[in-house]
Image (tube, rainbow, N blue to C red; front, side, top):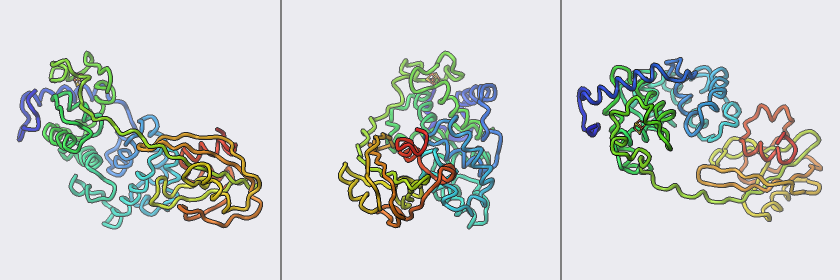
Length: 360
Ligand code: SF4
């Protein structure tokens, strides 16, 4: 198929055929997902933020709970940060929740209406090109494309794009193609169809070309190099970071500290920790009135650019703890019931499990 980004005005016959086939397939085969049953721009915005770097099956219960807790943009805008993070607790990439909250506050301050086109959406804090394209096309029917990892792969294969999709130039190229081939008849369905094809048929490895509804339009398939595309430069290896974590127990409660907002996991509660090798534990422990400190295990956790190796220590508190360690802005004692309702990252849950406070 000719290079789609050169297309302007009405779709070429080839692009029209591609659109008809893909939209027909999507209508017949699409998965029934909760955010596909609505045109509410706020709900679609929430779903798209949650879906970034997170699997569909994981997102569904979070999406449903989040929307029943914060059913519209104003309720989210008025929520306390602690409550937003608690609703996100366990979903990971907490910066997304903070930015979604900031975005809702910004929309509320501007009158409470989610902007109805891509340009307006891009002015909302935390909304980037992908999310703006998704909300604009799905909720408002604006004929704009979008590019996530699935769409980049599908476009690279359909049009044999050899740009590096991890580089900004490759992303921009894919965005130009996505904008050029968007189906004006139903831009939201079209964008979701491209994502669905990438998620279920045009998979990173072993794409199911025999079952692909657009195989006849696919240059990579015709040239026998579907699996060689897209070109992706190697990701940098995650760097190793050692952390010392202190689980301080007071009867049936545990000491938690809240991370300052600018840090990874900012705003979330956890047993206090200090970055560094084993000796960092001594400085941390010295802040609190503790009995004997015992190392009880080790936890590993991989973030996008870092591999955290966390030594877990446990001790009894012998008096009230009032110190707030560096990197935190509050401390509290939490009961088991509290642990179910405050914002706690998965890593902190692993630490608490290793120390015997939560089920490991
Ligand atoms: S034919 Fe194969 S490579 Fe091309 S879009 Fe379909 S699944 Fe992907």
